[in-house]
Amino acid sequence: MPFNHCRQCGRLFHFLDPIVRVESASSWPNDTDSQCPDCRRLSRDRESAEEEFRNLYLLSGIATGNVKPSEIKALEDLFGYRFPSAYRAYLRVCGSHPPEGVTGSDCTTNHLRMINDAASGVIEEHKVTSLFPKAFFVFLMRQGYPFLYFPLEDPADPPVYSYLQGDAESKRVSSRFSDWATNLAPSIG
Image (cartoon, rainbow, N blue to C red; front, side, top):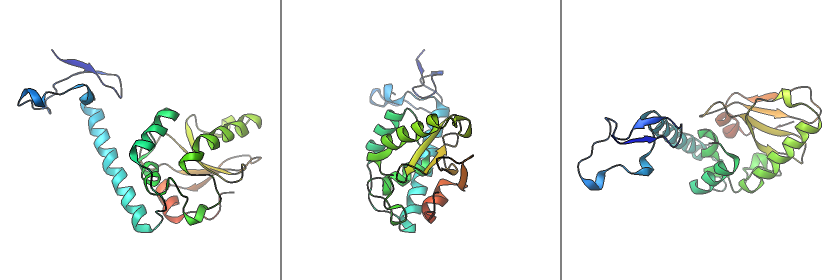
């Protein structure tokens, strides 16, 4: 019996699940099809959501510089997790050049590693780890002090928070990343 481990969740599943129809040897599933039915369905849903967010950003007029999906995938591999759909779509239209509302901030793909390292340093130095969720991603930093981040629990459209060095707590800037992106909140501090 053809069984495989899902490359996403690790579960063992029947390689020829009922939704796969093998009509000839050339249509036999291969290792690149090694997602269980649940993960395959979730991937399709995420891709659909990402396209909807991308269209929303294009219609709102914030597109300034696109990044290829392969570059986004490389960043996800670097950080070790998949970005939420709303943020992936944002990177696809604004990842190489910031929109006007955040000009002067570090927020493009070539800054992401640096700003996440800097934010971790601020959090550790000021011993405020308890103010942050277990898993979060810093996507914008202004002059090394205030930064914006989102928790990684929501795979689609997470809330956006702001933290300013010395504050007693983070402040919610937007209930959804897509709202922040289309409105480009004028203040992050």
